[in-house]
Length: 318
Image (cartoon, rainbow, N blue to C red; front, top):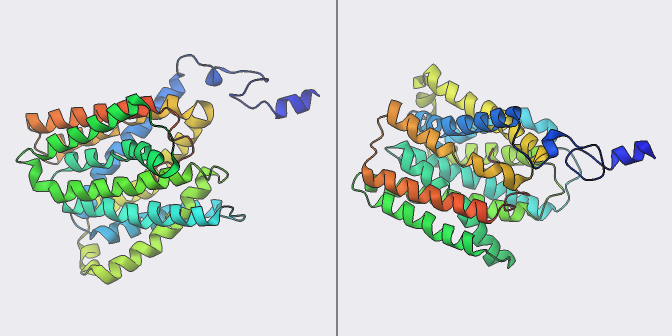
């Protein structure tokens, strides 16, 4: 009986031996360190995407990133594959479509900051799509946050300097829409282990982006020869550190805590990207851009707090 009781009472569930990690109290120092690590890794990854696409074509950049990620995650992809229709949609929309748009957005952009903020619209859009497609209720707080987020992005984009990046901001928002749709579908596919789902995304993204690059882009060989060690380092960062290590940290965190308790903190990653863009990449941050960024991120956080369980079944960003 003792063995069976321990088996059905894993860490964080009622009925077993509790630990500090499963209690509703303050986060442990180790958990805080993991959150900070993910914030920094994802924030740096946005800047890394811009560095890479300054030299490499955007679809080629995505393909190279995911050949690295797929090599690490392929071991998690094995039968069975339940809900294969939903899995196919997740792998296609969340893989080549989402990341193709994201890398295209950074390739189009002059500055990192506005595009990074536009990609965060996936959070309020997830709440909106869940309402439109699944008929789920959207809380008043989330509705307010949705409006605030879009007003912030609009105000930021209307700045004369940011307006030069309107195409990049629009493409980034489209990429965010693809990830929001992926998130909504993934919430109904919770029987798939997260790293298995991530592996499927990588395995779908790599060949699709490679084919897209071959058809729509040119000069890949010349670009690869011109790439510096820094550029190759950004690809390794994206494929290994962001796609594998940071994702594993997120899964570790949400296994110890409720997803809604952890994920709102992770929304601070754009601040890291904005700081890097301003300090090292020549981003121009006017008062209007900063105000728009603040308003947009306030809206995103408001939605996240209003819909705390929103991303519990969603794949983490690869």
